[in-house]
Length: 77
Image 1 (cartoon, one colour):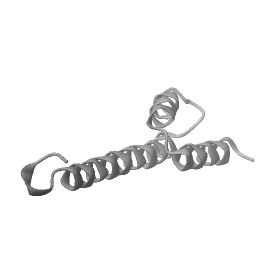
Image 2: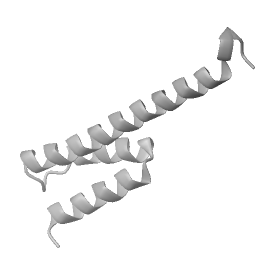
Image 3: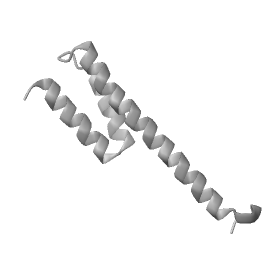
Image 4: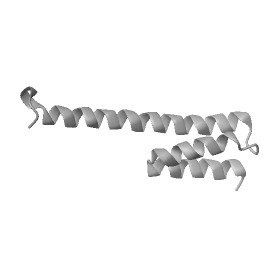
């Protein structure tokens, strides 16, 4: 298995875990990975950035839905 394949598998695994801290740590680690080409490193970092963005958007939508449910009629139930 090539280094790129190992990195792709690691990114896949990290995204599946859906833990922002782990995604950020891997994002930073990839910045220092000189074994990858600039293009390969950028592609994997973009995958992580998109997953972080999607997680944040999903979290915000859930929070808004929860708030809407709790504040029916303008009063907190």
